[in-house]
Image 1 (cartoon, rainbow, N blue to C red):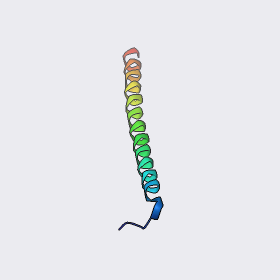
Image 2 (image 1 turned 180 degrees about the vertical axis):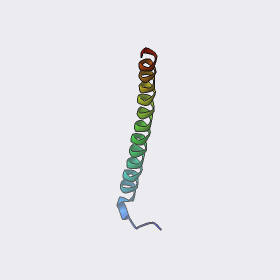
Image 3 (image 1 turned 90 degrees about the vertical axis):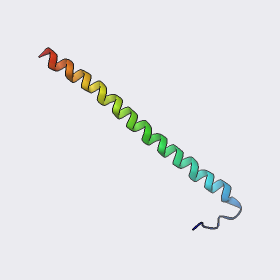
Image 4 (image 1 turned 180 degrees about the horizontal axis):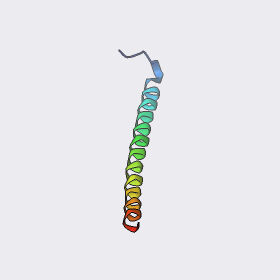
Length: 52
């Protein structure tokens, strides 16, 4: 079910596509950074346990 976009179909659909790509990129970046920070936090916690 596709709405009739008329002569602006290319612009509208490309805007949707670009938005989806940007949102997926932001989600990926957020998950990647969270894993990296969690890994670094685990290292710091391990050092604290070894010390004390």
